[in-house]
Image (cartoon, rainbow, N blue to C red; front, side, top):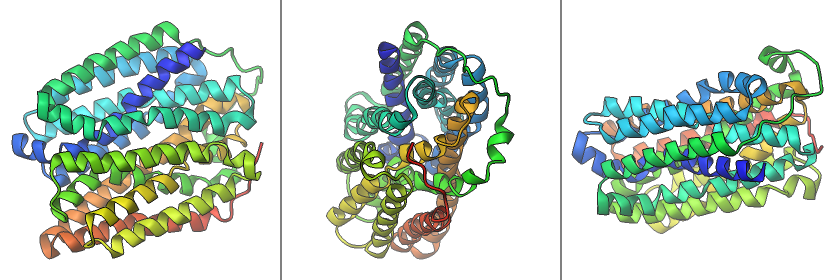
Length: 391
């Protein structure tokens, strides 16, 4: 099981990479195939929406087929073929289709490991194990920053994507060979996704899940690059270094949140206070959008660190899932988390594009960051009424 989880973690490294690497390709894709920042926002949003849409069938497959075949087949077909299509792209529409395929390929990897944690380990350990997997897997976030920018300059983005396709296929084969499916749930209870949606205790957690991951994922995965280029005039290499800083902050935040629910005896207040600080960082970024690049990068790092509550929110909801619905439960939460990113990416792309053309870069990015900060505050206000869970 340890070997299988290790290979799944490598798969999650790829998942983190694919959702974040567009930020450092803004300039080169604009030059080579005419892709604008708005085009890439759509492509990024499609990745997240395809990923989110797959969570319902992935949840069913985890409960009925198991993580081994679910993760390996989808990563092989979606991740491998999608990366090859990206490498061959000649127009923005090709990038859209490629990112959707890659999103499908990445959709089961983290949830396969979370399913194993939910079925094979004590519930009290879930948040720590989930944060550990998320934190280690977020190395992909780092590789998608300066290393990807460097590889693009040395080898070109097309060859880099070909090698990524080969790696995706190799990891998919590794998952098939090493992952062991957990034994069927001893709880004979029948149920469906609708049973989870009928649980009022989850209704105040869902909105928090929708908005909590979106700011860090969207800004790190796409908007940080165009912002630093348009407003502060940074080069591709400098953007790579800046996104590396934010990526490290996100990893450190994930590890920091892992044990906090056990340390303080609460999940609700760990999530709520962390996201309030995150919202304050984003709104400060919106208010100081024209200030120095150093301040902007520092605020991006702060929102990345304090916004890393994803595994704790899932652990909060996981406490209320029936054992027989563990797979569908964690994937349902992932659907809301990743789907929220996709929806806000579409909204942010439209907002940024319209204001940019009318009022310029400063106003466009101030409005963009305000959108993320205010939606996060709305999620926090609803989450305030949630029921806490510590076991």
